[in-house]
Length: 282
Image (cartoon, rainbow, N blue to C red; front, side, top):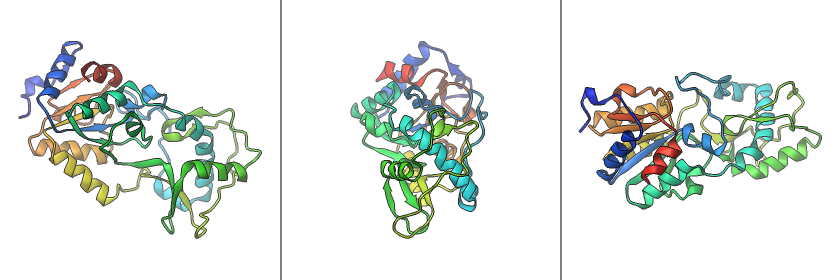
């Protein structure tokens, strides 16, 4: 049963941690919805500030990527620079805590907005990658899929003199390449059909596949509690899951640093770092 309106205020630490621990112990089928805040402690930057506003320029739009060769060159140049740093990231305390809660029989499913696969590397077994996975590349024409490390080598071979040393890591495997001309960056085509290659992730302006949405909604509907961790829920794909849970009378609790789009729908919220909070209850 959802909490009363007077209970909706943010819980203060450490009493909030005790409240969260009690809530978790009452549940046996929690679905966790996670966002960038569980991976920032792994060194992967996030897009938004504590108020849910963009910290940097918004990410590439799907239609721009599909329609413009210049946009694709710029995207892959930045990705080429950012991928080694992204691939070297290790699970955070938050990832480990969520995996421990799964092993303890409290969390039944993780639905993540992140594309870094760090939940799986931390040991979580039941993970839905809502926005896809960055370690796979796909062809938009023939749907051929292959490993991102393989494509990294193809990019390296096609651009042997490309210097990405000034790059600074940005969200989702991207990198900031200030003052570097990407118009000459060579992007290989699909080896099977010659089509355009794209990371196997959902870009802004692109729809989450129906089957993925259906599985995520089913995980929410089967839950006896929803734990939002490290997400402002500003994107519809995750916010709709919270709305679906509330419509079914399922408590939604959040651990997040700052505002979320669903603040008025939550049973309660802890404002804090995901690793510290979740680590204290796992």
